[in-house]
Image 1 (cartoon, rainbow, N blue to C red):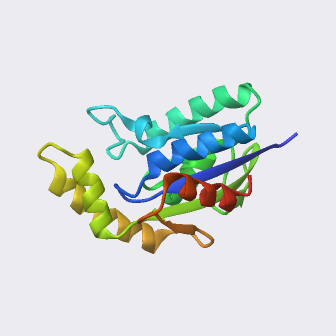
Image 2: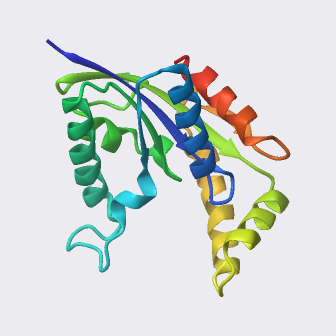
Length: 186
């Protein structure tokens, strides 16, 4: 029997609120009694130096996600909320890690069929600067702002068809999380 999974990918540049919204989505789903798992993708590649042959740490991210997902599916889970800056651009990696294949919104080819919802959180540059200034109190603020600007452009150009865009400027975290859950139709 083929497994059927659902994944909600929340991507966006630094400072748009991915992690905060991801945790709020998880809490909203928990309160509704909707079974799911939440994975903060930024934690899956935290190794220095980068493994040989994996300078971008994509292979270790995939291995770690596959391990975590295998543990969750062994417990009967079939829904994943995954946050990471470029998550919406990493469909092949995520689908392979979840046991599927392909790059479309619904993929198969492995042992699993995966229905994917991509959400791109956005914010104006002034909002991002303000948020990052509260978070980055060391010497790297300018670097983070520039990296966020670059990532926002890459994500906008590369977002797959059907990606839901949600602006986070001036909106409450619960409001944004509600829109994300509505996009996933969970």
